[in-house]
Image 1 (cartoon, rainbow, N blue to C red):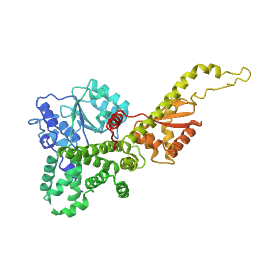
Image 2: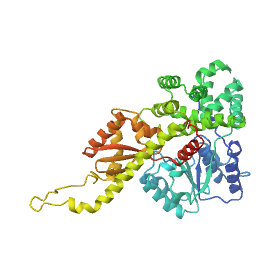
Image 3: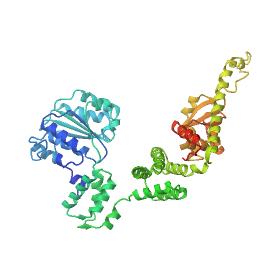
Amino acid sequence: MGQVLYRKYRPQKFDQVIGQEFVVTTIKNQIKSNKIAHSYLFSGPRGVGKTTVARLLAKAVNCSDHQDGEPCGKCQNCIAFDENSAIDIVEMDGASHNGVDNVRENIIEAIKMAPSNGRYRVFIIDEVHMLTGQAFNALLKTLEEPPEHAVFIMATTEPHKVPDTIKSRCQHFNFSRIAQEKLFKKLKDITEQEDVKIADEILWKIVELSCGYARDAESLLGQILSLNKAEVTVEEAVLILPTDNNKQAIDFIKNLEEKKLTVCMDYINSLSDQGVDFKIFTSDLLKVVRQTIKKYINDGENTKALQLNQILKGLMEVSYDIRRSDVAQLPLEIFVVEYCLQNNNQVSGKKKTTEDTERKKSNLEKAKEDNIHNEDKSHDKEEINVVNSESGVKTGQTNNEPVFELEELKAKWGRCCEIVSRSNIALPLVLQKGEPIAVYGNRVHIAFRHSFHFETMSQKKNLELLREAINEVMGTAVEVMPIFEQDEAEKVVGDLAQAFGGTIID
């Protein structure tokens, strides 16, 4: 069975590591000057060399004849390491061995023993962020006062999940994605060593698809080499490589700019039928929009850049919502509908601005009046809520006394959204942008910061769905009133439009 490329061509020296020059130079200098740290933390995205550099460091510190910071590859310790028989090197996968017992067994007990052959006993912990809290605490005690012969090398793709108490005791090196030119050269060298001819066009395609991750690039190249041909044509390679969503993303954004709702919705349905990952597709859309905005700015087309900037903000929201949606394409569909239909609801000039302002102002004033009325009546509660001495039952109750506490509704808001989703699967995403802000008697006020969400919830059918959901969750009959709390940025734009007699084009 052939060895996969990323293992076969894994760097055996620091100088063979690509794209991490600063990290490699610093570590080599530490080895040359014999100033090895007791603990290292390597962070960065997948497949950029974290584990490779960790293994090279473990190999180099125990090399008996390292040269210019590089392991010699010939001494007994280097040979044992290459054969995976070095007993002074302990590798642990934090994802599958994340408990406190694993840390005690693999590290705390093992660290008590002095190294057998080399100078150091080296512990490599991959995906260290997966350790449990108790496991981190156990590890911390060892890191606080490590033995002279111990070196810890921890690698993670999510450094924010590593406790600060651990990070503060490590030398932290951040690994970055690899530049395209360096990745292309790496792939070119591999094809030459494998004696296979592959067009540069295909190698650049692999580089683009891998997004700067060396392991991904080598895996894709391995799929093409598996054809076992001396020369691979472009047509053959295209059949193997994953579909590039870039062209689809460009076409989609073009139609979205032109507000072709039907075309965009059909596009989304087609992608769904093809099994496209919408998280990746949304990421591709963001990349295309950013590049296009830069082009518009460079060409002096600021109006188009401003329009695309709105799409960019909407797609950022989609990329967040898509992680919480049971239906992958739903957040994108909601944004497309919102963006394409916004202008359809607008009337020209001051009339539209004035009517919206008065309507939203009316709702806010009504909420304030309810609040003032509630406060004015507070002194009457003692007189109204008289308890009958014989029955022990209240003879009266103010109409504005909340039927339940606001905090109670906030705590159950997610449940209300879940019930609404039974009848309208898209509406909960709008409700998640709202917040219950007050309860006056049996009237519940829900605040929205954006006009689209406010207008959506002002529709009678949507209000009825929310009212029934709250009734079911809270066990009492209520009325629902949406409130528009204008976002500061949106307010400034509205004021400017009104001052100059214009229309806001969302």
